[in-house]
Length: 136
Image (tube, rainbow, N blue to C red):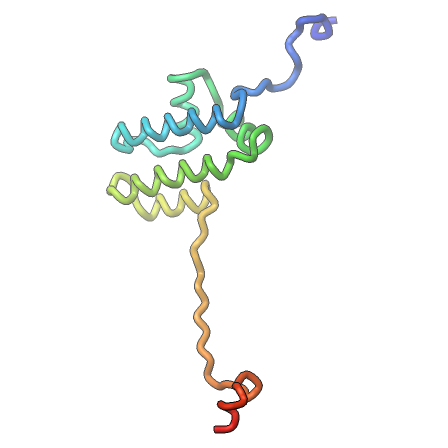
């Protein structure tokens, strides 16, 4: 039977990256390339795959997804941080549209609007006053 012979390749998708550190190192190199090329492209997973295909070996988005979510989930936050930093820098120097950058950061890097709640106390119950304040 084919596939059961000794020396046959295992079934399934072999890992493209040997470790999460290897993937992060490659993504760092990609982000540096984006900056060196004056932010002519965005640091999306799709553009990363195109860069990997040119500079490393053919890689598709599903491979990146599996690496970040299945094989090396411990590096996902670091990957998103690198992506967010590169996008924010591009927006701050005017290379990316700020509105679209914020939209992408919320969708790709789990950014959220910070909501601060300001509460104004109108009346104070005697329960919260010290003995000296209650005597007044």
